[in-house]
Length: 355
Image (cartoon, rainbow, N blue to C red; front, side, top):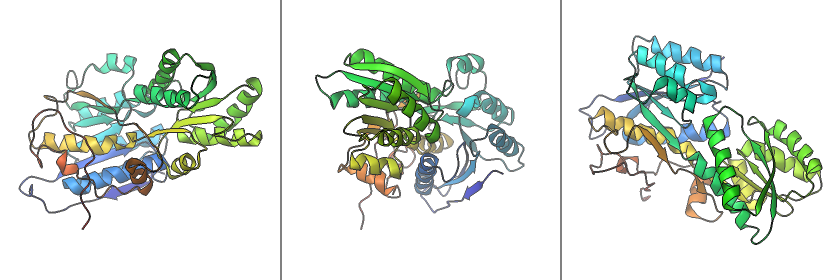
């Protein structure tokens, strides 16, 4: 049964004359899943600062559950002003059509549409006027970034590499994989021996890495499309009597507490994170849109942001990720309603000074 998390964040603000913006976020994951928990917490912080009423509904990794939640929202008498949803497991087309029919504006975040889906839907606002746009991280850049970092840690050496990708259908995973392949062309010292699909599962990645270590005993690095699969690969490496970070370098994505801890210890050698911010930043766009500042003019309708950053222990960004404390971020500085400015939206993370 789906877990419902209703977060009502109502504060007094200079925009008291405006109706409170009400947004429902359809989160495809679990509330206690590290990545999706980060997504929720960042979104909650943005909502609190921007005076938005946010409802978060969790699909618990089940397509039917998520669609049932979406249909229930679309049939409500008292509908939200906006819906944010993820093109998870290819549901983007159905969700856009559903909410367009219900006349509820929808924004897709995190996972872009694949080519076939784009052909079905066209561009945002083209055939489905209530589909406002998309905001996604640059997964292609991130995939190349992590692979390049692994190469940089072994300068002037051939680096036999294996990859544990996500799946064959999720755009974010496919784009990260494309970034990896681009990196192997850009860094010819990276010798990609094999790609396996771990389907985002730690246990499956553990089994696959165990097999890969037998098939390719010269492996010096592993690239995993997310931290859960990296954890499985690390277990397999240790089970072989090898030391991750010394005998075999590990590169991966996400900023879960465990991933940060392993990055700090050196078991993970290259870690990129920050894409969990996408729904929170999309909320800035929706607040401005609600108040007459349409992001289409300066940002476009299909927005891709370089949200991934290499997380290096001891840096301010690493410490902020480890603390998971987003309440000091000045989201109003990003908003053209709260802080008027011209041009594209500025999504720099400005921190409010603590008293």
